[in-house]
Image (cartoon, rainbow, N blue to C red):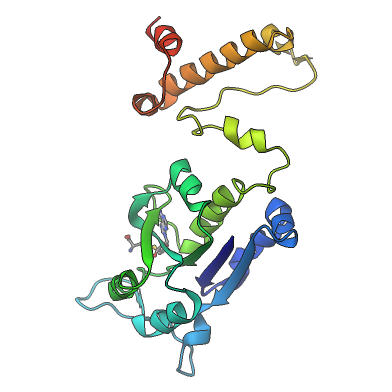
Length: 239
Ligand code: SAM
C-alpha cells in the first residue's frame, strides 16, 4: 500500500517512522510519502493561506497552492482523503475498507480549512472522502491522519505480529472487547476471573462474549443494533 500525506508540518508525521509502522515501512508492506505543501507556493513568503471571502475569523488555505500539490501527488486512481470535522465519521469499518486500497492520499488542512473548490475540483477526477475523527476540533489534519494511518496499517497482513489480535479487537464484530488480564493471578488483592485459568476453551470463549456484550450494553448500547447477535447473545442481554 502506498500512502501520501500533504501537510505544512512534515515533521508532525514523524511517528509514522516509529514502532510497528516503521517496521512495516522497512519490510516494504507500506510505502509512505510525506510532502511539504509549501513546495507548491510561488511567493517569497511561501504563503498557503488567505483571508476568507465573506469575512469571519481565521484564514483559509489557498486553492492555488493545494491544486498543483494534489495534481502532482494524487493520481486519478487514488483515494483522496480530506480530514475535516464536517466529514463522515471515521470508524473501524472505514479502516477495513481503506485497508484494501492500493493508494491513499491525505490532505491535511490547517487554519479554518481548505478552500472548498479544492475538494470540488478533486472530485472531478479522483475518489474523494471527507472524514471526521470525532465531534471535536483539532488544530490541523495531521493528528487525524496519524490516527487513520495507524488504524488502517495495522490491518495489513504482516504488520501485527499476531493477525488474530485485530480480529478480536473492539468493533471487529461490532461490539466492544471485554477486559484483559495477565500474570500474576492475584495482584493487590484483585484476582483474575477463575474461568480464564480453567483451560476450558469453550467456557472461556462464552465468558468473553458475555463480557463483551455486557460492556457494549453499558457503554455503547447503540452498537448492539447493528451487531450480529445469536439467540444465546440475545438471551444473555435480556436477562
Ligand atoms: N473551521 C473548521 C470547522 O469548523 O469545521 C475547522 C478547521 S480545523 C481548526 C483545521 C483542520 O484540522 C481541518 O481542516 C481538518 O483538516 C483538521 N481537523 C480538525 N478537527 C478535525 C476532526 N474532528 N476530524 C478530522 N480533521 C479535523
